[in-house]
Image 1 (cartoon, rainbow, N blue to C red):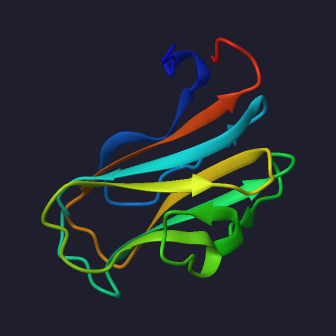
Image 2 (cartoon, rainbow, N blue to C red):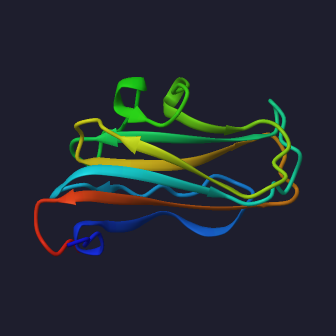
Image 3 (cartoon, helix red, strand yellow):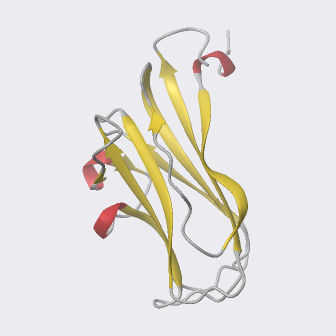
Length: 143
């Protein structure tokens, strides 16, 4: 039987909106799940991004939902390399088309947070959303 819906759960990490400043990150609890994927959705850039006017998506993790540390290369899959402070995606050049970036989390912590960190001047916002898709539920059906 091909039943995926009962073994996954999705949690909003960044609510869909047009942003021109940092979002307020929320902790996503992975308790009861053996895997997770962070899906980062970015629409057409509101500005032409540069190394000074940019958005960096920073992924952090925690055992207690209080003290968060940046993920490293060993904690994630699907990205070419994790930057300082857990940067898993950077918008530093023109972004003319919408896209989705998948980041697999393989670290051993219980909580994840994703922040869209804005630097420079953003006179026009950029559509952004993200969710954490929790997989391999220990309980069925997953909720």
